[in-house]
Length: 303
Image 1 (tube, helix red, strand yellow):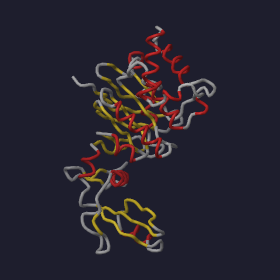
Image 2 (image 1 turned 90 degrees about the vertical axis):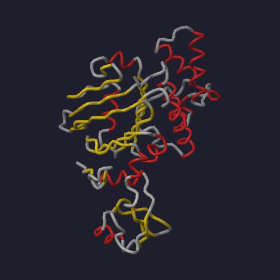
Image 3 (image 1 turned 90 degrees about the horizontal axis):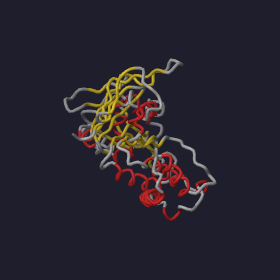
Image 4 (image 1 turned 45 degrees about the vertical axis):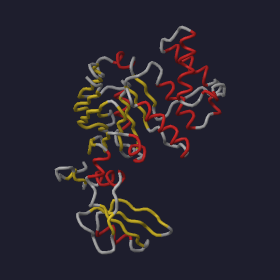
């Protein structure tokens, strides 16, 4: 039976009264799964719960036959976790620190450990800078080192929280290419607020806001369901407020000093609008505004 991560009716409320997760249910197959939502939507709470760093108030999580909530040690033996922020020892080289983490992982035989460390540093394209101290690494290099640590032990569940925030375009592409290779034999959950990360990587996704799952879908299918419902036009800054009042605006972007407006509707709002090819960003904004229609024509209502 293919590996699957099942999340059923997960709920979490913090002592300050903030409900971070509300009845979250997801079925996540092997491969890359994107969890998309704004900051504060509940993404990191879900990631920390999956990583056994906190317990839910209610609900269950199963990785294959492992009960994630009750069998935390069994989960940790097959878990790789790259949190949004993680510390490194700035005065230690990448090779030495990864060797140290390999010992903690139980790889005690020196030759086997050296082979594992070399393989992971090569896989993350860090072998040539293995003797450089981590304090001299760029943000992207540190992220790739974090993935090397997370991959110790060949995890079946890899959790990556906001991995490309702050990376320059070249580092981001290199990092995303690395992640895409990892999703072939494991469940990889990518949490992000960047739509492009999900559209370029993930075969399935969910959109979360205020602790609720608003949409679970295949990105390509979700985009296809918006075809024929996205329209755009360029307007002046002065005309933008009236357009926003009169139409279901999905997004606005500055374009050579003017504003490109994209709206959602079954027909062109006016002759000034032209049909536009939808993308995942349109899906995201439509779901967040409660106007996205699934394959049955039902409107997904944001909570």
